[in-house]
Image 1 (cartoon, helix red, strand yellow):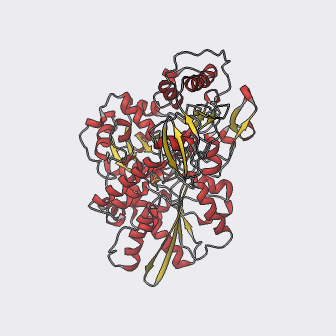
Image 2 (cartoon, protein in one colour; image 1 turned 180 degrees about the horizontal axis):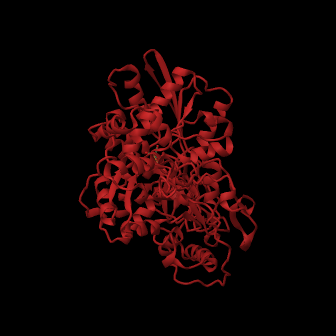
Image 3 (cartoon, protein in one colour; image 1 turned 90 degrees about the vertical axis):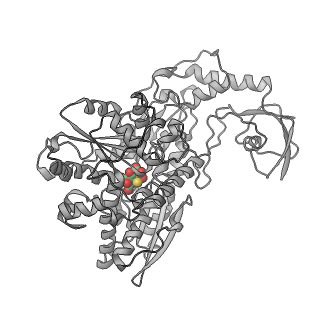
Length: 583
Ligand code: HC0
């Protein structure tokens, strides 16, 4: 241990602790801008000390030091708030602002910008340096994210998220000094790189240099069109994530309020992606059983996280035969809305407009994939639009609720609409890492053994450990499964699959983002380690309270098989719910 003095207070901390972290222990909050330690996985942190906003004075050292990356040493005497330090921090911020486009009222990060917040905290009231504003082109080539390099403050958090967390590594720092810029490799448009659209860069960007593409206007227009029957689906993770933006405790189950808000916004029907998550379990569970019985390619990989699919296509195309042929729950609900629901309601599928509320930026990309137009093929009618017309992230829905003047916290609860409104606890846990696997095991066990599963909670696959493992005995066969979240962790696993080390495993779940979808790139900002864990806790609490906790017990799932699909993996399922990827 090391004993130091911070602003006159003595404190003892473990060796290696940074000045920033030690200060927290004596109740001193040092402002930071480029520093990042809120990924919560594999100790990933980003402490390049570039912004110089966290500087402090250490007695005996001439210059100020950045506190985020300076470890304490025995006997250090540190000052964090002398007039000289405060002036230096302000000047560093003013230099940044002198080059920054100060269009804050119309900026997509207005209100959640860290640069704005730090300036407010440090009482910055003037900009003395004369800097030149950059005028670089905006890159909106991706269906998921938009990059505005003019707003970049070179903190390089996005590079760490892309390279270290996700192992995708398509961003680089280019140039020096004023000309320095973070850009996709080689200065290409994002769409021409191996970007998987996960949006983790947007989640950690302190300004609006990388943001989600805003598609809210398309939804307002559809709702205003009297000819359109506009339906919406809500992803599992959104059930516990929207409330925090409206002052409710992180992880609060706001399902009923979210449905009320969507109805007030004007949607004609509100459905739950939890319903189609249950449908996915039926199809994917039967697919797994089929592969095991018939010597199919194993281990089977989950296919619901579109960043993961893109990652495999880009980096491991030889492993594509391992991916389940099931579409994701989002992409199952879309074509069912334009076929089964359309028929049941007597609505022309041409008039149905499907909106998704997702925690994920990659879902925008997924919906835009060319093969996701099963409804048009089913009806042989090119006038039917894509299976899912518009995907909005959690952040976009939050903006729409604000725009509509809805006092979210005071909303009463409403129920989802019938046909695709019911979801089980198994579907709810899809939103957390390990949840798809746990849901699949709950159903597979009962289907294979014909017995009732006594203990529904598979604790081994829960939690923030990056790679998790479980095994379950079913009629003499030990089914072995693995779970990974973040693409960096997934890469470690699938390197082993490629090397033939995991031959005796049956099923692998991969979620692109840390913590699973509750940590998705479209989630409320900031998404810290603590928030990820609180959202996960909210997910499992909702599961515990659900009257039905196994996908095959969902009465609306039983109904669609009886009335329409007939059986899992049947002819109609293949036409509407499955797809294939070309290596
Ligand atoms: Fe997820 Fe999904 S669980 S990917 O994380 O499978 O985005 O929440 O909607 O589709 O259901 C995201 C979340 C979904 C899908 C579901 C799956």
